[in-house]
Length: 222
Ligand code: DX5
Ligand code: ZN
View 1 (cartoon, rainbow, N blue to C red):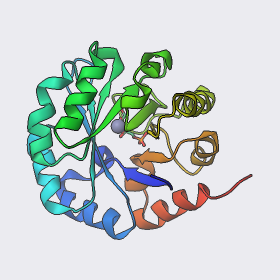
View 2: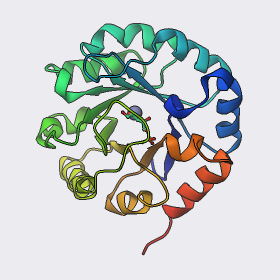
View 3: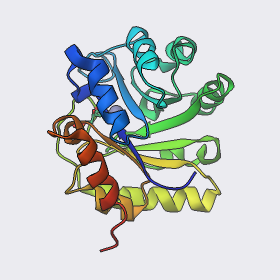
């Protein structure tokens, strides 16, 4: 898969108007809808589960990019896949049987992603590089929207791209946290191709224009 994907995170959407918010990003050219599932254990925050995934599935045709910030993520694979998840991304920090878990996600017909926190070395995914459809390099510590981008992530993305290339993996590289007009170009040039943006998109007066601006910044070689 080539090109750039913009994946607005509904964590920053107005849930009283969720259908309208999703329609606006769909009309505005979003590629995926990013759904942040948090359990109050792996991360301090608590968000939503299968009911919200089912609901979002009914109101958009866009792929649902489900980011599982939960302990024991495998207990949610079947129900989330059935609810309409397109991608299931699990954290290496809570996935001791990562290779088996990735295979199970693919058996269920979803793209399989592995996420690494800012403090987690890339080594955590080196042995499963070819099992991955997506590598999510967290550019903030997960748990909340609207945090500041961690600059060290740029170099980490560059090393992630090299690792996947050497392994012969065609996995996408997604970045998540603090992605906005000031940061997106740097991580794109480092090798990221899939960009989660919560506050930047849903906090904008015109989310569609913001998606376009972010996408254009990925075309600029500076
Ligand atoms: C953070 C979540 C993100 C979050 C990003 O733990 O995984 O997806 O919604 O939000 P922004 O783009 O506002 O940093
Ligand atoms: Zn996320």
